[in-house]
Image (cartoon, rainbow, N blue to C red; front, side):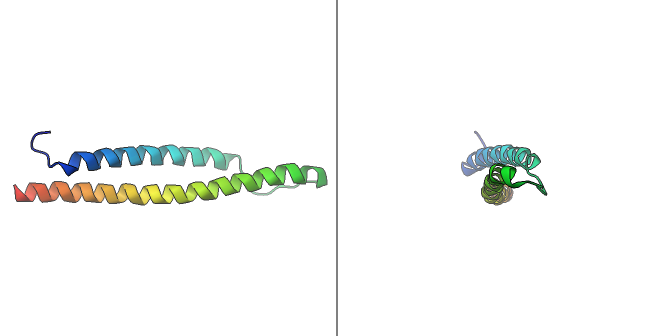
Length: 93
């Protein structure tokens, strides 16, 4: 690309990919949360089956939450770095 500093397109592509993956994971997390029950009223027979499903679901959501936070921070850092590179390039030319 003529006239664009070398690292800028790579940072923008990385930012775009990170943001798309972040959006997909947020949608997936929302789909998981619709299956989560706030309160379960179970008898003894249902307790072993449904309670274990809810524990597994909550564990998945907790792991997903960490990944979403990391991707959000990474995406934000890439946006700030891309903007800074673009401004720096504009001021030095």
